[in-house]
Length: 356
Image 1 (cartoon, rainbow, N blue to C red):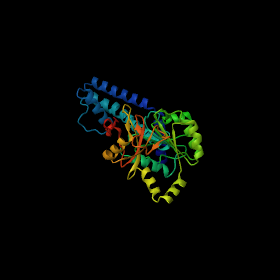
Image 2: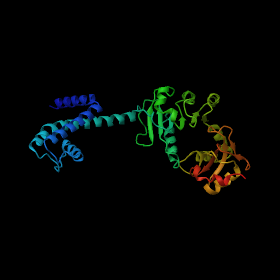
Image 3: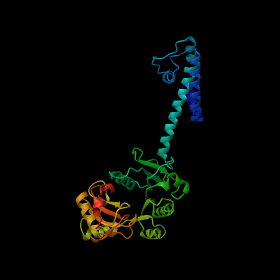
């Protein structure tokens, strides 16, 4: 008996799988209209107003049956008993089964990374997965309380499931390759706002950066991490919109030996989880030229922030660190500073800083 029941369940599921959502919706609407038309012919005036009928149909067909509305004529009762409840109950079961299958399918796609994100905009993409480092990167991004509310999309090539499924801010995509154009379209590479490339090795990071640097929009900023600094030199010969970083362990060790506490300063400046952190702020268009000295004093007095230097592009090549106080700063320049929290452009009184 148990075996027969299992066979029946499998058979029903297979039939539900074969039925499309379009067929279910059309059949349900047809059944609703048919029953309404028959009830009109039966003279069920209390049941046939549209708002009342929809409520009555759902309550009766789902077998909840509050009893506040029911057929009052003999023909109406026959219609309900022979056509509405039996066929409606079957449709209701198919609808529930189809809904459950769809929810399961969507959750499964989110877990396995098969979902398409070609519709999203202004998001952050992280290419590459490392057990501890990737989690830290996401924690640091989310710790910036005044950041723009961008979606974070983790893209990997490993055979794995969504490692941050419980985090509502993080999406997950598993790609066959970081250089395949169709796969990159699935993560909306052309509309991404920020990109981090942290591949399994320097070769994957290099080829990924080389590939996507021509596909992103002009405002998109790409950050790539390398262990081998020679890869950085080669990449910058071909891509000027990629900011590259490398491990500076030797430099940090020497600096901490010569100036004790230097490594701690580096950690504090890079972490957004606590204490003062390094941020950047582009000077908006339309702001007139001003001196670094005016900016320096304003940031310290009004925002308790210390200006470190001025860059002239997103990759911060040829940055001027600690420039003289009479150094001219103009629209489009990017200010780098340290503060407890990010200073937004609309929080700065730019007009009061303009040089005379």
